[in-house]
Image (cartoon, rainbow, N blue to C red; front, top):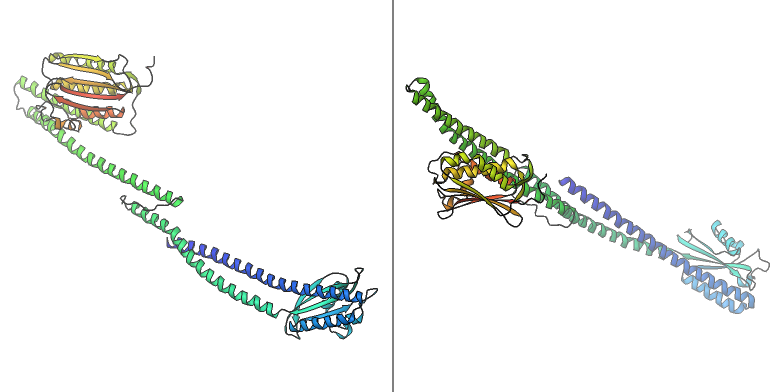
Length: 486
C-alpha cells in the first residue's frame, strides 16, 4: 500500500507544482508586457505631443519659440537617454520646413526597420518596434508618429527612440522575485501534497489493515474512521461486515457446540435402549430363557425399546429439518379449533385408559392462523400426550383457544405433576426432563419439536405450572389476515 501513497503524493505534487509554475509564468509574462506596454505608451505620448507642437509651429511659422521648445525637448531626451528626431515628409505637397526638423535623413544611418516605420508614419500610421542597438549596446524601442498640418496632411514624422535597459532590468528583477515565489510555492506545494496524500491514503491503509484482520479471523475491531465521503461509507461497510462476520462466527461456534452436545446427548440417550435391547436379545440367543411367557416378555421389551429408539430418531430428524433455514412448510389459512379437535380425537383411546376427560373451549369459532396443518396438529399431539402421561387418573385435560390483539392463543392444561418454576424455561431444552417426571418414559425431545414448530410459525410457547392451576402450556400465533379458501 506504500505504492499508492507514493503515487497519490506524486500526482498531487505534479498537479500543484505545475499549477504554480503556470501561474508564475503567466504573471511574469503579464508583468513583462505591462512594463513594456507602459514604456511604449510613454514614448508614444511623447512622440504625439512633439508632433502636435511641430504641427502647430509649422502653421504659425513661430520658429523662435519652436527653437526654444526643440532645445528643451532635446535636453529632455538626453536626460532620458532618448533621441527625438523630427523628419520632413518628402512625399507631401508642402513638406515640413527645415526650420522645424532636427535631422537630415541623408546624413543619418537608419536601419531598414526604422525606415519602414517612418514610411508608415508618412502614410499617416503610427508604428513601433524594438531591437538591439549596437551603439548603446542595449535594447531600444522606436516609435514613429505622423505630423499633420491644418488640413490633416502628413507633412512630417516624429521618431522617438528610448532605451529598454531600465525596463529590462525591472523585468529581470521581477522574474527573480517570481522565481523565488515559484520556488517557495513549489516547496509549499510539495508539503501540502504530502499532507493531503497522507490524509487521503491513511484511511485506505487502515481499511486494508482492517481487511487483513478480518481475513485472519479477528472480527472484534473497527476501522475507527469517521468521514462524510466515499471512504467513510466504505469504512462503515467494513465495520458492518466485521460485525456480521462476528455474529456469524459466534452463531457458527454456537451451532458447532450444539452439534457436539447434540451428538453427545444422542449417544447417551441411545446407549441405554441399545444396551437393554442387546441384553434381552443376548439372553434369548444364548437360551437363558426357557419359559414361553418370559420369551414373550423379553420380546415385548425389545419391541418397546425399538419403539423408543424409533421415536427418538424421528424426533431428531424433525428437529434437524425444522432448524434448516431452507425447510419449507405448507402454509395455508387454518382454524386452530379444528386442528385441536383433530389432535384430541386421535388421543381418545389413551385418555380412556387413564379415565381422563377432555374439553375444548374457545372465544371465537373462527380462530384463524396461517400455518402448516400437520405441523400444528403435531404440536397439539405432543402437548396432549405429555398431559396424558403426567396428569393424574380421573382428571381433565382442557384446551382453550383464545384471541387477543392480532394474536390467536391456544393453551393445553392438565392436573398432575407440577413442574418447579426454576425449570419452566429448561423444559424446552433437548433431552431435558423435569426433576418431577417420575421416571416416565420419553425422549426429552417432544417439547423441543413443539417449540421449533411454533417459532417457525412466528409464534411463541411458554409454560406455567402450579398446584392450584396445574400445568398450562400456552402458544400464541399471529392471526391470519385472510379467510379460509373455499
